[in-house]
Length: 159
Image (tube, rainbow, N blue to C red; front, side):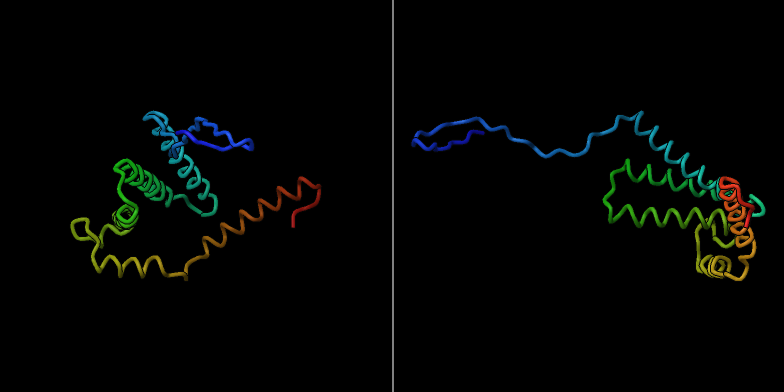
């Protein structure tokens, strides 16, 4: 592209001007993308494993890890298929609910498909907030260990 300018003496000068085209972020090659996806999944699984100290048992852990890995796999498939956002989000939500129903409420589905009975069982099982004593004990135990660590650093007895 060229631009013409008129100087103070009245003479016209011509200069070449470079045009900058807008570009998107650089693309990762296949191997780097796979490594990034695996690393992100590993971080999620690590966070799930660290939650085990909040509970009396770690019986919940295999199902939680399965949900996390399934979520990452679904996200990878949707991302690589390049679906539009308006289609990808409901698809991921539906896949997540399907995996949770399969893992946590398998007896309430019909041939693996969630039904109205699945919703009733989920509502009664997951929205019952009366049995949080195990969680409360785990949080109290973690807070106590945290405070012990802080007070030892400063040479004071635990609270």
